[in-house]
Amino acid sequence: MTDRQDSADKQPTRHVSRRGLLLGTGGFIGGGLVGAAATYAAAPTRAAIAPDAIQPAVTVSPGIANTKVTVSEPYGTQKLPYYGPRQAGVDTPMQAHGIFIGLNLNADTDGDRIAAMMRLLTDDAARLTQGRGALADLDEELAAAPARLTITFGFGAEIFSRTNSALKPSWLKPLPEYSIDQLDPEYTGGDLLIQIQGDDAISVAHARRMLLKDARAFASVAWTQTGFTHARASHPDDTTTRNLFGQVDGSANPTRGSDTAERIVWGVGAGDGRGTKDLRPWIENGTSVVIRRIAMDLDEWDELDRLMQEDVMGRKLGSGAPLTGSKEHDEPDFDAVGPAGFPVISDISHIRRARTSDSDEAMFRRSFNYDDPPTTSESAVHGQTRVSASGLIFVAFQCDVEQQYVPIQNRLAESDHLNLWTIPIGSAVFAIPPGCQEGGFIGEELFA
Amino acid sequence: MKKVIPLISATALAGLVLTGCDAAAENDVSDETEQAAEGQIFAVEDPWVKATEESLDESSDHSMTSAFAHLTNVSGKDQTIVGASAGMADIVELHEVIDDGGVNVMQEKEGGFPVAADELYELNPGEDHIMLMELTEDINPGDVFEITLELENGETQDIEFTAKEFVGAQENYGDVDHHDDDH
Image 1 (cartoon, chains in turn purple, yellow):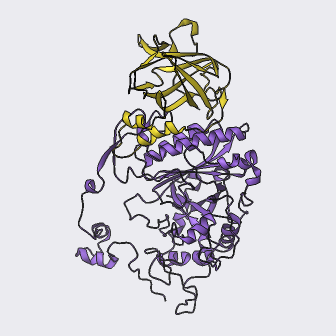
Image 2 (cartoon, each protein chain N blue to C red; image 1 turned 45 degrees about the horizontal axis):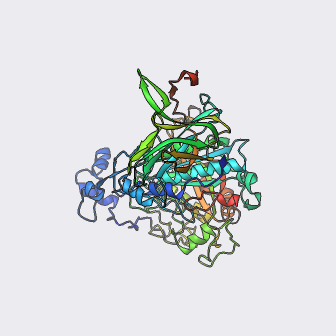
Image 3 (tube, each protein chain N blue to C red; image 1 turned 90 degrees about the horizontal axis):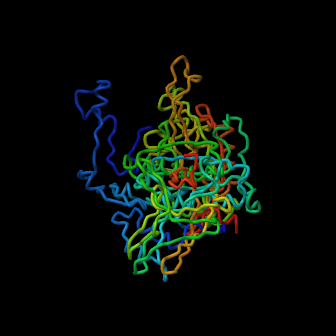
């Protein structure tokens, strides 16, 4: 099947074809910029409701200074639970902003001090994610709109070495060196991961500051990566996000809370029963994360036309559907051939190279985009001024890095058409410890 | 004496949850009152003590620091805090900060901290606080220290204070005997 026409996808909005938009405006066909600008027309599926009616203003009190702050409910006030068997920020809903910080422990931060640090950071996270200033927070108002804030901690090998090396997972080490890699130490490694995500950039920024103020007595920042996805409410919740190549990114993710996600992320249950790996979590309710910074050459990517861009990926840009399907979550048909006898989904397309018959070779992706200004040293491509230094903070959670992640990465590094436009420039692996209950702290199992 | 214990006591947290971001939540004294443990005099919110690590704050003096909390009198009768003691300091005083001609200076508060029944008494940086001098150990961030409040009626209450790095709370001493040249 070679039909390239985008069809309606799962989103609950009326599909409006490009042709329809152009015709619908009348008189602007071929009208260039004016025509294009005039044709953006939303087609609501129900009567309009005033924003204030959907998101009423409410007054909250974010701390002991007892000030009153007006925020919107529910998008401003929404909290994801902090205490629980698992840390939030793994297979919880995707937010608009993400900050990833790798820290290196100071030489004199021993096991006791690591415990003290994690008690402080856990307390900060427990308060901030619930819309409250940190302990001794002079600016608690900045925490008033948690907006699904999550704060997640990950441990590098050094934390285990200084506390409880018997618990260190065997996969907790740098990924194999790939020929496609051009890793920058500025984005690589780290002893402690702090992952901060939320829909409100102000509360995310405040959380970063409060956490780093408490961490600096114990560790120094090795790297920071700041990323974003769509603003909340610009798309329906749980829409798969797009990367800056325009690709729908994360379609193959297991559904949050499904049997597949339980097995792939947490090593629990049999999943779909088609996996062959011996998946065991390093600790109950623990998992792992791989964070790769992927530079994406948008300026070179522009040289491809849309059909070529879709061939590289194996998916349609519009709907995210495989080239053999019509909807984002349609199963790709890797056997389908086109009129000339070539596979519809190219042998070196990203989705074919990533695909495996072993359903345990899978991950839960939670990637964020970055969009930096280009540096002057890389300011031209083919004689044209470079305008982007963009990419992806690729984030993948899986029970076992070695058995689940590495086989996929091996195949992609060996031959993935997308590699021509992407360069991995940072790489880090962390063990994600379980959550904790009130009175406990993240990582307490290392001190048991 | 330094103790390694969980950071948040159940009592302290009870108040926090209630005064969090719940849309209708007010920082209501009665909520905390309900959460106070049996026999407690004060419901305690956010107790913390300023850490003294020299590497973090060169202006801090290892020999002194200060402690803060919000105390709600849940005993049913008026109380006065007249003193305090702590394992990590040889001298513990109840201080206030006053405006001395445009300069904030701290001094011992005459008569202590009076807390009427059901009232909230705030110990904050730049305001009333517990002053700890002649420290006997480092106050490292994340460690927890016990301070005992002494009441006029002879009763006491132990409170656990978490050490936090904090660059504020640098009030001047009005008392020349304690003058700190750094400020």
